[in-house]
Image 1 (tube, one colour):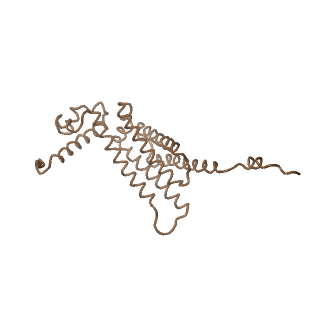
Image 2: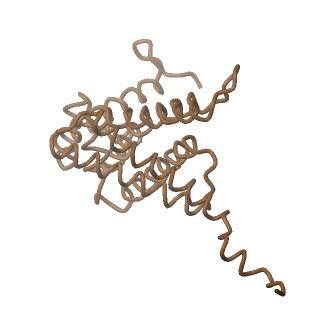
Length: 242
């Protein structure tokens, strides 16, 4: 079966382009005025397309919102993964000291946080990913949970880059990662709602303390777990006769 060509563009490409126009319309409307403003009429007007083309790609405005959320988070996650890969790949050439490695991996954490807060400084991105995503429906709630879990795994990669010798159970690592993501998201939300009163540098520097502090606490806990208290060790030995 031959592809239908119109104005030099095949049907599949035209469908993809129309879907993207609705996603872009959703980003603009939801990010500016909220999800309730994203009516079918408003979306079609912004996209310059009819309702027929909306239902070609989406079954509901909630379905569109999920596509908008996926588009924004995938774009950010792709750049974050590239950053992590660049800073955790093996280095060729001369060996680096522990201090040099620590400085490099702290740079990774700083750059990752800077990337995130730069995104959040865009009020459209911030409103959609931090505000509108909450409490919309069980389906959107599940997507939010999945996204948070994905980013918690990336955060724990950064923590392990800072302190490679961390020893922690997998389920505990997930809890720690989720806690760190939650604290950063809460901080970012407050920053946005207050109208961005602090610089990105201030946000990064203070959140970096949380990440590096957690990494050091985890390595400290691992060391303590391996230490046998001297008093206990001495008491366990049989007393020799005087």
